[in-house]
Image (cartoon, rainbow over all chains, first blue to last red):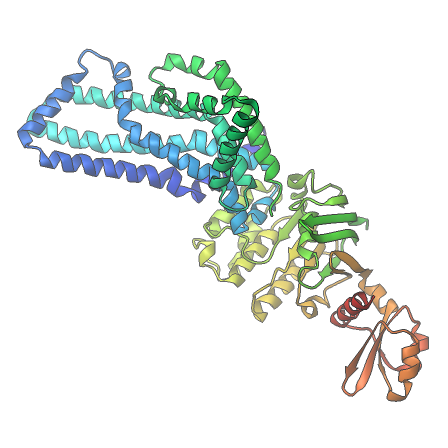
Length: 284
Length: 286
C-alpha cells in the first residue's frame, strides 16, 4: 500500500467522521454530559458528610487490587456508552450508503477515483475501529473531569487521595479494555454490519424496514420450508448474552477472535459486504 | 485523434421504460460535443453510462476503458459534473478541496485555489450556504484543477442566471479546453453552446438521431427561405422540415446539394436549435 493510498483512505475516514459528527462525537459527548450532570445532581442531594463517607468507601473499595485488576469493574461505568455506540452504529450503517443516493451526492463521490470497495471498507473501518476511539477519548475526558471533581471533594473532606488515584489508573486501563471490547464485538457482529450495509446500498426507500422485513421473511421461509430455525437461533445465540460484548481481560482476546463461530460470522459478514459493494455500483 | 468514446448498442431499461434503445455513439478525442435531446430522451442515462454510474448493456469504451468494470480507474482520466447540487451539502468548501486533493492523483490544489480566488466563495462556508451559481463555480474550480482527458457535463448550468452561465462557458473554453481534451455537454440551452461545439449528437426516445461533426452539418443540412413562387419546387425536393417565418416559408433540407437549392431562395446553415426541431419532427412523422 503506497503513501497515496494511505492518504486516500485517511481522507475517506475523515469524510465519514465529518459527515457523521453526531454519531462519532455528538452522541458520546451528550451521554458524558448527562452522566456528569446526573452525578453532580445526585451529589448535591446528599449531605456533605455522607458524600465524604461514600468517597472514603470508594477509595478503599478495591484495596489490594492493581489498577489492571480493577479495570473490569470500572469498565461497567461505560455501559451507557456501549449502548449508545451500538444504537448509533445501526443508524449509521443503515443510512450511510442510502443517504448518498437520496441526496444525489453519490454522483460526486463516484466521480472521484475511489472504488466502491474502498468506500464501503472505509465505512466499516470508521464505525468498527475509528468510532470507538472517539468514544474512548470522550469517556477519558469525562473521567478526567470526574477525577478533578473527586480530588477537590477529597481534599475538602480530608479523604486519602491515593485510593482515588488508583481508581483513575484503573479507569485508564479500562479504556483499553473498552476499545478492545468494541472492536472485537464489531468483528463478532460483522454479519449484522454486512446485512445493514447491504440494505443501505439496495433499498430505494426505508432501508431499515427492508433490512428487518427481509430478515423476518427469510426466517419465516426457513421455518416454513425446512421446518428449522437455524437463522433465528444463530442470531439469538449472538445477541442473548451480554458477556459476548465485553472483554474483561486481555488474555481472552485471542480466543474470542479465533474461534469457529466468530470466523464463520466474519465469512458471512464478508459475503454480505461484498453484496453491498456490488449494489453500490448502481446510483439509481 | 482517435475516438475517446465508442459505444455500440447501448441499452438500458427502467422497468418497462426504455431509456436507451441501442445507442451507437462515437466521440472523437479533442472534440467539444453537445448531447442534445428533449426531457426523458436518455441524455443523463447516456452520460451516467459513460462515467460508470449506470449499468447498461452493450459495448462501451471510454478513454480505452470499460466504465462498468473500472469506474474508479476511469475517473482518473475523466471528470463529471451533473446538474448543480451534487456536491455534498454538509461539507465546507475547504473540506471539499482537501478531499479531492487527497483522493485524486491529478488534482492541483494551487490551481483550484487560484480559480476560487477570482470568485466570492468563502473557504469556510458549507456548500448548503452557497448559491447555486457558487456551487457550480466551486465544482468547476475542482474540475479545472484536475488534469483529465475527458470532461462530462450534464446540464451544468441548469438553474443559473445568464451571468453565471456565460462565465461558466467562458472559463471552460479559456481555462480547461486546450484542443486535446474532450468535453461532452448535455444542455437544454442549445443556443448558448452552439458556437462552442465541434461535434453534435441528438438523442430522442433513447435513440441517436444525429451524430455528426459541426463542419459536416453545413454540407448536409441547408435551410432555405423559399420565395412564394418557388414553394411547389421546394416541396418536390422532400424537405426535412417546413415552418412559417415572417410570412415566408423556411425549408430545411438534408443531403440536397446547395447548387440545386440556390434557385429556391436565400440559403443558410440551420441553427442547432432549428435542426434539432427538424430532426425531432422527422422522427415523429416517420
